[in-house]
Image (cartoon, rainbow, N blue to C red; front, side, top):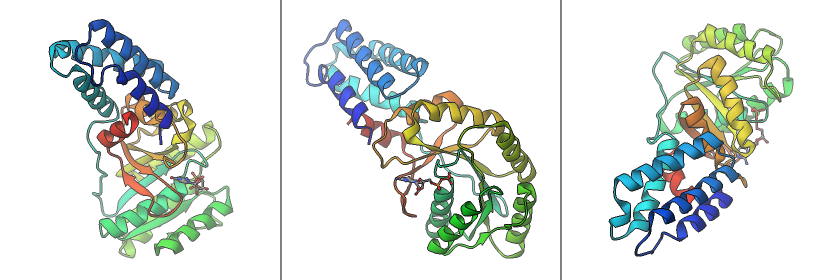
Length: 295
Ligand code: GDP
């Protein structure tokens, strides 16, 4: 993953690695390369510029140039700053509420339904919860079937009302059903469109308002680069979501989305999806991701 960015940053930092003495010009030149690499990986311009400025200030502030191993210190600074940019710490998921209600948002094809299943499976096995999956896509019967297939795979019940065309009503009834039947987590999978449109945004905003979830997660395909950031912003403006799920990180994807999203919407990436199978889910670790990006 992130091969492009890793290689480029590696090249940029190579000058500094193992160099006995470096100059301020070296630092500036290297950071220019780092910035170029970030831009190539679809990190937005402002984020990349702020990033390199911060690293430069810190490098000069800490007198990196006069230390014995300036290269190593620079690499550490870049890594730490990159991790900070992606949230610094691992962000947990809020499991309060009886039941905990989790709303999934995102475009069609982002991996919402797959991730709903993965999260249900994760909560069931790791947190010994009893989750209920809810199918709230009123446009595509295939989407309801897909969630049932996922539910069968992981042994989690799926609530659906194929003839009901009111997603708010379905979600509310599902929560009532959960309360009556001993489910302590309700994961609501919603309809997605190929592009953002007003009707879809209003629909999910209405569901959000009606069920007042503990967690609203925005699911986004990491392969979509800069578009991922724009989509995140549009959803966040309407839903003020709590966290991001970055899917398809197993593919030949670039790192830009992971780096930019947090800084643009100021929300943490909470989980990553690393494959189509139900166990291909991981908690997002910013430092680990930074290490991976920089190689
Ligand atoms: P939705 O329309 O947002 O519900 O998206 P789906 O859950 O149907 O996913 C769309 C496609 O992406 C499906 O073919 C999934 O198998 C695939 N997919 C979802 N998450 C991942 C992932 O983390 N890695 C890979 N490689 N494929 C994924």
